[in-house]
Amino acid sequence: MAKKSFINDNFLLENSYAEALYHDYAAKQPIIDYHNHLPPKEIAEDRTFENISRVWLNGDHYKWRAMRTLGVDEKYITGNASDQEKFEAWARTVPATLRNPLYHWTHLELKRYFGVDELLNESNGTEIYQEVNRQLQESENSCRGLLKQMNVVKLCTTEDPTDQLPYHQQLHNSDCEIKVSTAFRPDKAVLIDSENYTAYLDELREAAGLEIGNYGQLKEALKKRIDYFHKMGCRLCDHGLNSMSFETFSDQEIEQIFSKKRNGENLSALEVEKFKTAILLFLCETYHEKGWVQQFHLGALRNNNKRMLSRLGPDTGWDSIGDFSQTQSLSNFLNELDGKDKLAKTIIYNLNPADNAAFATMIGNFNDGSVKGKIQFGSGWWFLDQKDGIIEQLNALSNMGLISCFIGMLTDSRSFLSFPRHEYFRRVLSNLFGQEMQRGELPDDMELVGKTIADISYHNAENYFDF
Image (cartoon, rainbow, N blue to C red; front, side):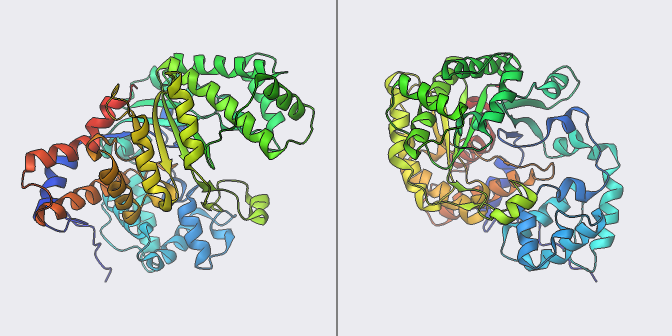
C-alpha cells in the first residue's frame, strides 16, 4: 500500500502559535512573485502541458543534480529518453532526497496542484504520472490556471534588453487576471569579459536600431532599451554578478577599454572591473531616474564543470556557491550612487551564508528614511531557499535590521509548479515567530505578531513595488 504524504495542515508548524500565525495571517495572503524566470510566451498563450515532465522536470537543475548524484544516466535527465522514462527516473530518485528540500517541495507540489497524497517512489511513479497527466489536460491546470490555484496576483519575469516583449504586450491586451510584468536583465551588456560580448553587441544594435561603435553609443542603446521597457510597464531590473565591481575610472579609460574589446584585444582584470563599474553606475543612475527597483544577485560561481558546459550549455546544473569578497566594493558602489542622490530602491541577494551578517548590516548603511525598507536584504535564493537558509537569512535580518519591513519570498524559478515555495516560506516564517512566542521571547499578542507575518507575506511587497 502506498504511504500517505506527510504534508498535512500543520506541516512545519510546531505549536499552536505557529499554527494560528500561518493559518490566520499568512496562508490567506495573495502571492506577489517579483522575480522569476517563467516564459511569458507560455502565460500569454495559456499553454496546457502535455505531461508533468514538461512542466516539472524540464529546466529544473535542482532535480537534475540530485539525479546525477544518484547515478542516473544523463539520457534520463537532459537526454533523449521519453518524458515518461524521465519522470520514472525522477520517481526512483525521490526517496533518496530525504532531508534535501526537494523531498518537501516534491510532495508539497504534488499535493497542492493535483491532490496526490502519496509518497512518490518507483512503485507508484507510473500511476502518478498518468493521473497527473490526465489532470493537466483540464482547463484549471493550464499555465494561468496553475498560477490562479496558488492565488498569484502579480509576477515579474526576467528579460534581456534585446527582447521586444511581444508576449508582455499580448498579456497587457488580454483578459489575463494576473498582472505580469518584466525585469530588465542587462548582464550580457555588462560582462565585457565574456567571449561572446561582441556578438551580443550586434544583437543589441539590432534591437535598439543604433550603431554601437563606441562606449557612448552603447550607453545610448541601453538607455533606449530602458525607455522601451519602461513604456511596456517594466519597473524592475536585475543583475546576476559574482560580486559588485568598484574601481575608479575616467571616461577616456572606458572608451579605450571598449574599443580594445571591439577590436578583439585582450583586457586585463583591472580593465574589466573598471568597465563593469562604469556601466553599472550608468545603468543604476538611469534606473533611479525611472523610479525602478534594482536587484543584485551576488555570489554564484557558475559553470564549474567545463566538460559538461561544453556538452549541455549553461544553466544545466553545474553552478555552486562562491566565496567572493563582497562588502567593500558593494559599500563603495552604493555609496557612489547615494552621494549623488541617485540610489534607487535596491534589493541585494546573498548566496554565501557566511556573508549573511555582512549583507544584513550593509542595507542599514543606506536606508536613509526616505522610503520604508528602501534597501532590502533579499530572501534566501538558489541553494539557500531551503528551511535552514530561510531561517538564517531571517535571523540575520531580524538581529541587524527590521524584519517587519522585509518584502518576503520569491520563486526565482522556471517552473509553473514552484509557487508552493511561498507556502513553504510562510510556514517556516510563522513557525520561527511561533516558537519565540511560546518561549516568551515575543509578546503573546497575536494581532501584533500576525500583522508582521501578513506584511512580510504580502503587504510589504505590495507597497514596495510599482507594477
